[in-house]
Length: 135
Image 1 (cartoon, rainbow, N blue to C red):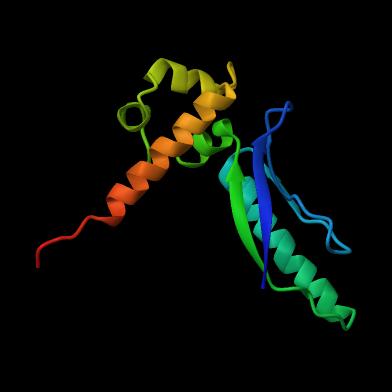
Image 2 (image 1 turned 30 degrees about the vertical axis):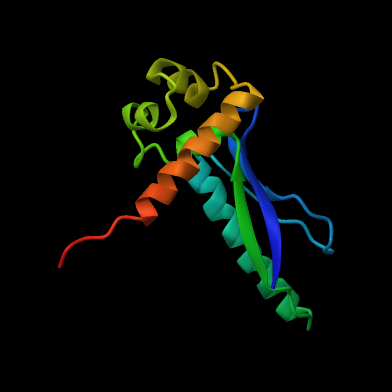
C-alpha cells in the first residue's frame, strides 16, 4: 500500500479543497466543499469512484493510504466542533482573537506560528496517549 500526501486547504474562492500531491498515477484525486469536512468526504468519494472506474476498465486501482495535511485555516475549520478557540489557546499559547483571525482567513500565520501550533498539538496528543482510567 502506497502512502500519499493529501493537502487540505482553503482557496481564495472561499471553498475548501483536498487533493493528492503526487503524480505517480495516471489519475488525479481531488475533493471540494464549503467546509474542510466536505472536501475530505468528497475526496474519499472520488477515490472510490476511481477504483470503480478502474474495475470497469479491467484494471486494478492502487491501494492507497492517505496522509492528510492541512493549512491552518482548514485545520481550524475541520476541528471547530471539537476544539474550541479557548481550548486551543490553552494548548498553543496563541490568543483566541489571533486564532479567530486564522480561522476566518483574515490573517495567515507565519511559518514559525504554524510550527508552534503543530508542535503544541502533537505534545497535547502525546499527553492524551498517556491517559489511563481506573476500572
